[in-house]
Length: 146
View 1 (cartoon, rainbow, N blue to C red):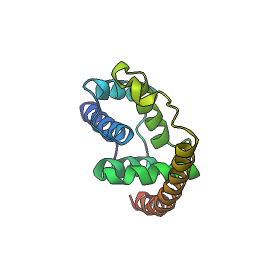
View 2 (view 1 turned 90 degrees about the horizontal axis):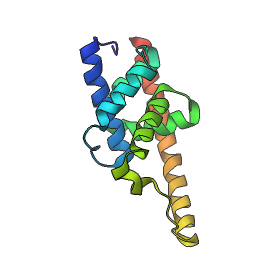
View 3 (view 1 turned 180 degrees about the horizontal axis):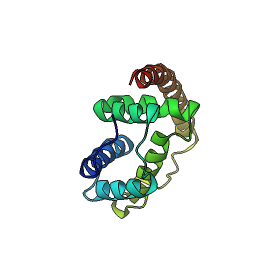
View 4 (view 1 turned 45 degrees about the vertical axis):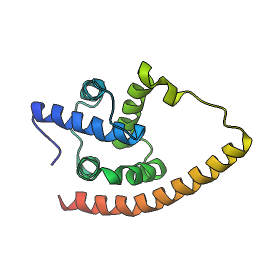
């Protein structure tokens, strides 16, 4: 299912980079970063994913709207999952890109805003993790059928 030929694998990694980086940036990634991601993943993860990991990545590529939910569920249930490791690779590439530095530098929003952001982020994370857990169960069931 997720075990392509080398040329097809490169195309899949580029697509994967586009989806993951768009999720992290809320916009399309700058030119060249998807190729850096593909090269890094080809080196860091040379073996094709199998079972649940393959089905989860295929789901994210087919339906990118599932990524925030599956990411939240993975953060709770499998922090070391392939999806989370690939997100970390994408994040590392984005953080070290000079034109994106401002997005990743901490700002001092002040105590009231910090409390507000903490509350909103906590509620959002809880809702995403709950919905993502249900979606994760569905992905796991699909992985068992293949």
